[in-house]
Structures are given as structure tokens and as C-alpha cells.
Image 1 (cartoon, rainbow, N blue to C red):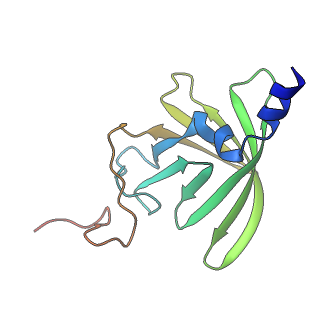
Image 2 (image 1 turned 90 degrees about the horizontal axis):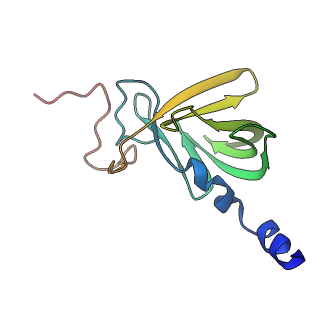
Length: 134
């Protein structure tokens, strides 16, 4: 029994983030394929949250008692700056979305289709949400 508990304690932080892995819309009309850009989507994969122009390593997960929620220490970086914040993640009641609560801010993200193929901002051929074909 102690061996199983020790094995669970040694799992990397990425394993703890798996229940939330996915691509999520920032808004109803967001482009799911455009990860990390205004008007696009955010992504959680392998213990990393990719937001607009930033990335956060999701560490030190703590289950919230009697809630389908997890509190993380987010080790973030963007624009040459680094910071640490706490954030709580919680599935929506239908489990088709995510609530992300930071100190003073709360966001609801709807899950993008599972077959979404992400395009990183700045990649060749990536169009912004305001770009229109002629």
C-alpha cells in the first residue's frame, strides 16, 4: 500500500493536469485552431497552460474537497518575464467546458471539438481572427 502511495506522489505534474487537457475557446466565435492568440483558443496539454502570449507550467496540484476542481501553482512566462500565481480549474457541470479562476478573475472556456488541429500564432499560413479572405 505504501508503495502505491509513493508511486502516485512521484507522478509528474503533467499527469495531474490530464483531466483538463484540451483546447478551449476564449469566446463563442473564437477560432479553435488558433492557440494562444487574441480571438483564438487556449490549450492545456502535458501540464502546460498556453494562454494569450504566455505559457504556465501547472505544478503542485491540490484537489479541492467536495468539488470537481483542482488548485494549481502556475509558473508562468511571457515577454521575457516570469511569475507565479495560483489558479483553480474546474469542469463545467456538463463537463464540456472549463472554469479557470485566478485571484480576482474567473473565466469560462467551452471545449473545442476533439478533431481541432491547432496552428501556433506566427506560423506560416496562420491567419488572425480578423483576417478575411478576398
